[in-house]
Amino acid sequence: MNKKELQEEILRLKKEKDICILAHAYQDHELWEVADYMGDSFGLSLQAQKAQQQNVIMCGVRFMAETVKTLAPDKRVWIANERAGCPMADQMDREDVLRLKERYPDYTVCAYINTTADLKRAVDVVVTSSSAMKIIGQLPDEKILFIPDRNLGGWIAKQMPEKTFAFFDGGCPSHMKITPEDVERARREYPEAQILVHPECVAAVAEGADYVGSTTGIMKYAKESEGSQFIIGTENSIVEHLRIECPDKQFAALSPLCVCPNMRMTTLEDLYGCIMGTAGEEILLSPQEIEESRRPIDRMIELGG
Image (cartoon, rainbow, N blue to C red; front, side):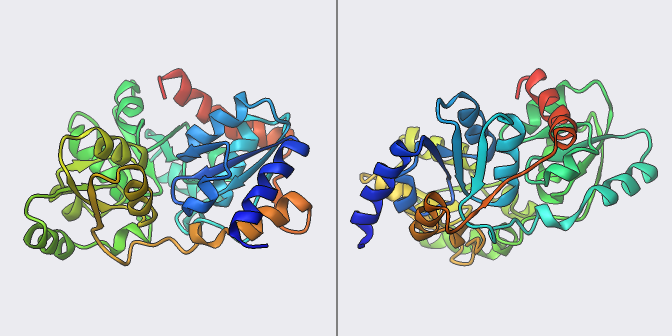
């Protein structure tokens, strides 16, 4: 089958087999075209909760599929490509968190959602890149241990001097490939453009940008802005999506190196194979794992996430 035929078959089969397809923002556009919902990991999980279908396939990485299963435990959940992991989510585990809690006994442990379900069982609250400021700002606690992304945590800390932060020295390998020199070069080559970056970038990159925000925030800003030229400092698939959705505007990548091989791992063929039962992997979590990993997510929702 060619791409169009494969897409048409996926669209037919998902209705026949009662499947909801989720595609993260960093997936290729050809996967967006067959998905029921596109967006960030937490937003997709909420959509899965509300979806009428009883079967869900995540086109993304493993921690995202785990979050879907945590928030929709009554549904069967698969990851389309079982090898698609997240290097940042794999930088620390629950035992690492427990050891850090011994070092920082009076700190509230705040975990980025880009972490495994097992790790979430040991933390106090979860945040997304779009909700972090709001959630941490509402915590009564003054001392925050932010894990695992030091760059995102540092960006939050800079804007919240009233709180004391401690960090784990982790981060996104793809976003950390963007350098301050990339910002300087973009300013020279595109003097009229606005630079939009993700807070997973290093501090010097964020400081040189016109806008810092989540992936969905970057896309929303670019779509709604009266500007016509934008340099995008996040996974380069977003440049492709914005070019398609905003043909009257110009977009360029801040760095050609900001490509997540794990996100790019999932293909239409993987999705088709998952639907047919020859690829992918079902996400299985015990009732205890679901209950304990959901607790810090529920606290985020309670605080307005």
